Amino acid sequence: MKTYCKPAVCNVESVDFIKPAVHLAFAGKLRKKRAFRRLLLATGAISRAELQAELASGDRHKITAAIDAVALHAAQRIRARDVTFAPVRQFELRDRGKVRQICEESADQQVFEYIAQYALTPLFRAKILPCQYGSIPGKGQVCGKRKLERILRHQLHGKTDAVKCDIKKAYPSTSVEVVMGLLRRDIGKNKPLLWLIEAIMANYPGGHLLIGGYLPCWLYNYVMSYVLRYLLSHAKVRRGKRTPLAAACVCYADDFVIFGRISNLRKAVKDTVRWTQEALGLTIKDAWQVVHFASFDQERQQWAARRAGSRQRTPGVDMMGYVVRRTYTVIRGKNFVRIRRQFLRAARELDALGYVPWWRARTLCAYWGQLKYTDSIYFCQTYDAYRIFKAARRSVAWKARKEAQRGAVCQAAC
View 1 (cartoon, rainbow, N blue to C red):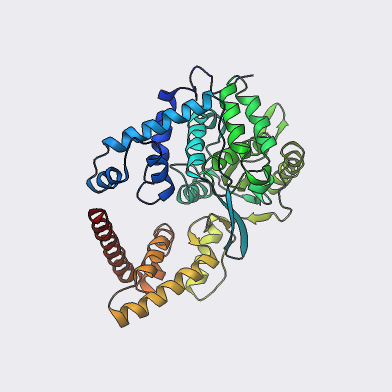
View 2 (spheres, helix red, strand yellow; view 1 turned 120 degrees about the horizontal axis):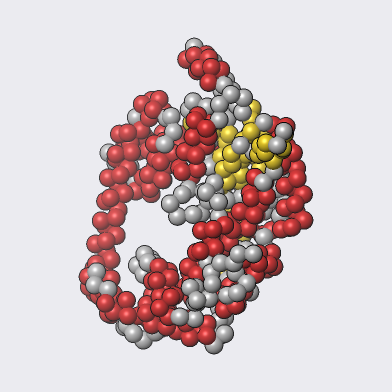
């Protein structure tokens, strides 16, 4: 059996190997995260005044030396098998009706998670499938939406169905024991790396992957790849020809959708539900979303009916904040209501004040991508979205300039 992350290549005890990972952990955090500044000052390689001066001037010589000192200390701790962390802070976050248990790790633990992820990169490249789009650099909601559009509009023609499923309480259900079992199977020869990952996850509350960590995102995608690989392995053989039951698949975090004929898809999903529970301890929800897509001709007929006043739509797959159909893509209904409400309020403020308040402008800028990558031209014209968004960008730029000026004044005073 092939193993990955060989000790000679992924040596977490080497300072030269882990140094890029430590620099990546500090990238973009020194201005915003006080904990990372404290971690840097604790090395003694840089003083507070020198740190503030280099952040203001852009010169990074002292900061680079201090980060190298953090990497050296981390390598020494790994070689001495002395890696412990402060307890993880937990708090509840209410997200659109759901209550999530969010965890915040110390800066020290985050640095070691970057080291572990960097060492596991060969494994993740080999195991994480191209159809997975959640929490992976270079991918995301827009890329996943484009993949769904390519499948429905170019790859699959004729009668097509889809089944959308998701994992019940994905991160809390993924135990550390299951993750370590898979890692021992795939990187069994790299004992220092296995020890480091186990030492990091020993600090996870409840013995499962935590929500809000850097390494857990990668580890969950790694575990999910086994579920998808088993699902896609189902096939039927007729007259010596092997035909997969699922013609295509797209996965975003704990949600996945497969395309094909509904009779074949039900067989594959039922068997995957059983195997996932037995092998990984994960539960796929019983409430599947089954979609019977309309043909291109039916889409054109429905579009003509909508222009005549009809409010009906053809079936579509609801995923990643979008609803994708054969010929067009719209924003998910609940998201659209929130976006419309924000633009209406911003329009009133723009007419009354002459500008959009920066705190609302940030929300509009965050929502603009959903309007940009969907068929929302009629909405933008009806609600004058282009003028409002232009004013919102000016407010965000003004706020950024003010914060930069305030930061320069504070650093000069110190």
